[in-house]
Length: 470
Image (cartoon, rainbow, N blue to C red; front, side, top):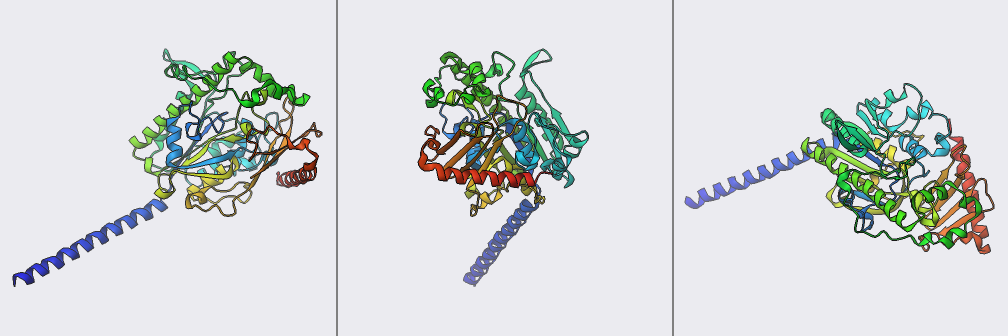
C-alpha cells in the first residue's frame, strides 16, 4: 500500500512538473510572439565626419570609444560600410530618401529636396504608420516649407558654436543634443518611436583657427599619446599628384590642420576627443533606455555620414573617392535578435542607401520600390546570399571649383575613379592588395581594356540613376 502511494505521488509530481514546464513553454511562446509583433523603438545615431577606423572596435588602439565598441560588440558590425557621396548634405539626403545623389539631386548649391522624395523618406512613412518621430541635431538638408511637419512630430535643430553658456555653465553641443534626445525618449516611451539623433561632432568648426572643441571632461584624453603619421602623408606622394588635386579644397584644408607635425598631433587628438564626447553621450542614452525600462525593445543604428582624411595623400576633409573619404563606422544593435547573431562582424559592402529601407523593415512598414538601397535585416539571419558585390560612388556638388566632380565604382577587388573636368586622369586600384591605394594601375597600359569596361559601367549606372530622377 505504501509503495502504491509513493508511486501515485511520484506520478503526480511528474505531471505537475510537466504541466509547469508546459506552462513555461507556453508563456515563453506567448512572450516570443509578443516580441515579434511588438513594434520596436528605433534610434538612428549619425555622426559627422567620423571615418571607419576612428573607433576602438575597428582596431584603433588609441581612440577611446567604449560605448560605441559595446554597441558594435553586442550587435551586428559592418566592417565595409560606405557612403555613396562623401559630403554631409548629399549623404544625409541619401540616408533620408534611400536614393543616390544622382537621383535625389541634392547637394550644396542645389535646389531643395523635392517633396516627392521627402514624402517617401523613412520618417514620413513611419509617421504615417503611427510611429512618433523625432529629430535632434544637425539636419543638413534643405526642404520646402511644411514638409518637416509631415516627417517629424518633434524636431529640434541645433547649430554652432560647440561650446555654449547655459545658465552660467559651459556645455558642449554634443551634450546638448544628448539632453534633447533623452527628454524625447522619456516623453515618448509609451508609444513606438523613431528618434534620429544627428551630431555635429566631430566636424571641425571650419571658421575657427582651433577647429576642434570638446568639453572640459575630455581634457585629459590622449595627452600622452603619439598619433602615427599616415604613410601617404609623405610629401613625395603629394608631389606626384596631378595639378588639379594639388589646388583642391582637400589641400587647402590640409594647411588648416596638418601642415606641421605639432599641428597634426593637436588636430587629430582634438578630432578624437570630439568622438569620445559623442561616445559619452551614447552611454548616457543607453543608460536612459535601461532606466525607462525600454532598452529591450529599442534598436540602435549607428553610422557616420562620410569619411575623413587625416593627412593621407596630403589631404584634409572628404569629397573624393579614396577609402578614407568613403568608409564609415556602421553597426546595428537589436536586443531582440537571436543571441547567436549578436557580436557578428560582416565583410559585405553596405551603404548609407540601406539605412532607410532597414528602418522601415524594422518597423514593419513597406519599403518603397523606388528605394535604391536594401534592408540589412537579412544579416541577422546570416542570409547574405545575393548581396551586392559592388557600389557606385559620386560627388556632384555644384558651383565649387575646388571640389572636382567625381565618379567611382568599387567592387570586391577593384576601384575605378574618374573626374568630370579632368578626364585624362584616371585612378585604378587593386584595393585588396593595395590598402592605401598607392599604386595607380591606370598608369600601366595593360589595364587599359579593364579600365574601359569600368568606364562603361559608370556610364550605364549614371544613365539609370538619371532616369529615376523625378
